[in-house]
Image (cartoon, rainbow, N blue to C red):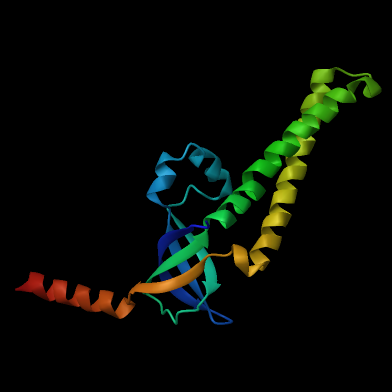
Length: 166
């Protein structure tokens, strides 16, 4: 059974090709995640993330919208960003240790260099894989509905400000 992750966002602008720019706040779950410090290297230090997505629901700037992404796709994306570099780091260290005798050097040093080369290859591979996956529309979040129209938000703010003046 395939579940879907939902998140709220605010449309901040329009983009070419019937797309919108949205601002997504990091979820509450991020604060409890054991990997949150690793996200800093991926831009996670910011409280909001900006994305451009197809405007399939005719959203306008100011609208609060709901995004959806399949949990299966989240797992695949997580693999690309986290597991691939970790696996290549381990593989590089093992290969470095195995071939250290061929270089006539300290096995620890060659393992370290192999691990470093492995993680660099893994990060490059993750970047290429993530670009490839983002071009495939299946792995991109999609807008599912307008939760609250930007015009509703504006009229609420006007009502609140007139209530406070009285």
